[in-house]
Image 1 (cartoon, rainbow, N blue to C red):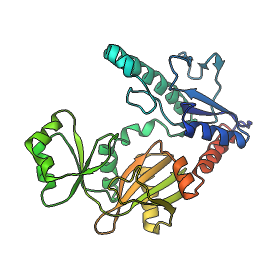
Image 2: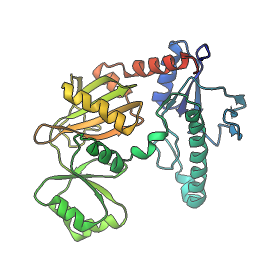
Image 3: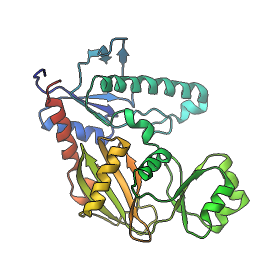
Length: 318
């Protein structure tokens, strides 16, 4: 038996100052559905959140929240390095206490989203696939499923890097992100340069010289595929043009399969052609940016996402 209901509010987890949050809220409300922003950037300083042991007993800024119709998860702002967070002064003053505070914040916000997931609320995206999203897991799962990924090494072992780089061109980048991809040169294989691996591991990957492709999948449907023209190894901030194009049917099927493997309801994925012309998966992003692609390529990713959230909010509760 299902309980008929009018549209329940769509909750957005992130910062009101994030254009992706504010634009999704605006478009969802154009669909006639109320939105509520859980501002994780201003929590805990200016946003008040209270949970009891009862699953649905949740209060935000003094308002008792009912069951959401759907939830868009943009960012928890759960680390000092998160984009938009300014914790420099606090870290300089007392880094240990600041990190503990961020840990406590992250635990409560994740607990909030986890409660909604336990209620069966549609989450874009849920917490359940979190363990699959780090690239050292993600690419391995994709390869295990028979999907094309580049040969990749994640390591802090200098000798492993030298072996991997023998006889081929290699790109390197951070394991998590935050810096541009660069090509590994002979000087990078020196003892001094590789000694930097003592501070942090690095991703090393076969260098793929072909075009960059961004694909968006929403609720099991491929909603956009874009070709990014750039002469730079890392296209970010170096896009010359972005244009829609039709994926070959086999690649389209691979993209849908990749989304299933990682367990995402909503994703923007990056693919790149290798020297033989094969499109290989670099990453499936669980909170992709899309407004810039809409502006440059004339797509309507914002509309697709807003309509999906509004439709979920109108569905009867099972």
